[in-house]
Image 1: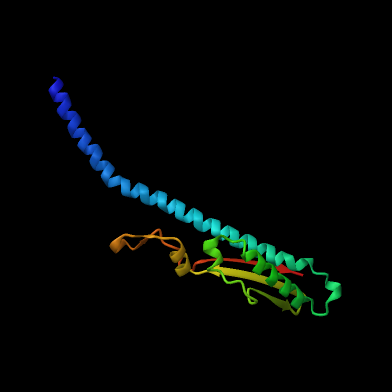
Image 2: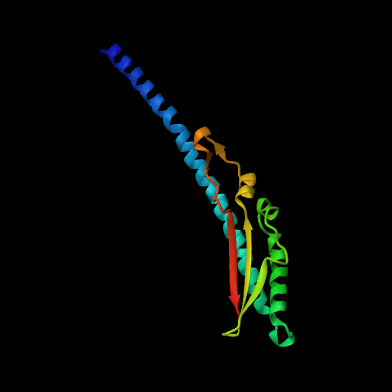
Length: 158
């Protein structure tokens, strides 16, 4: 009786080991994807926060002191974005370019409203360089990076 139970136990151990061998790579891949996307979403959040603050910084300009208010507000937003880009995570900071063209103004003539729009982006190739992905042969890259990269934009009207 004891011998038969022992042999049955060995067979079950083999089945459990086979199940483990088949399921372990999928569990690790799911955990890796969760970490990958959490880092990616964190970068997106930090970029959006910087762009929001830069667009809002133009609203602190005293409009009564300048003839071309839109140019001054745009300049202030660009300066703020360049400064805020320094506080982004190191992997993002080197890939996102904060230049004079990140914030631009547009006037809606009919309403007399000026809109300041600030935006920054990180391309898919830059994401792939910063976050390593796993290659699964014919399945391709896992987890897949967003094909258009990540971007952040904010608009303020005055």
